[in-house]
Length: 199
Image (cartoon, rainbow, N blue to C red; front, side, top):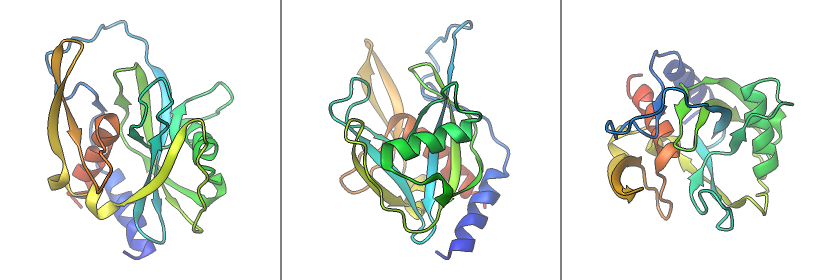
């Protein structure tokens, strides 16, 4: 897909109105405390300009939280981050060695609330210049990419379930080759796919 066309499709998708999402979307029986405190975080939904593929990471198997899971580069907003976009770019540089100057920011997707009490803002951008990714050994086992054509097709998503805290919980998944993409990452991508499907 030509570079201008990728940016056009994504900008068009981001311009569409829509509500936020959460880890609880498929589990309406979950009652969330009204006084819960959500910590701000941001992830980079980065699309490679030359291939039209979305950059994802496989988290280190040694991490305490979500070991081995597929995720976007990103994390919590630090006090030194002036904006959520700055947080996403900083985290991407730390986790996969991405130079922030290579990223053309296109906009944001609606906020996603996680079961771990984060209020995650997905920052969408085009990555230029054929970057050479360097995984941060303590956090990332692998950096890989998946075609936007696969992730942007709602038909590739499945609803699955597993027992969690004594109840069966449901979630989206969007497998690709050896990669099992599920949970918050899949839910955010499903929201993007729904928007792309309308373009």
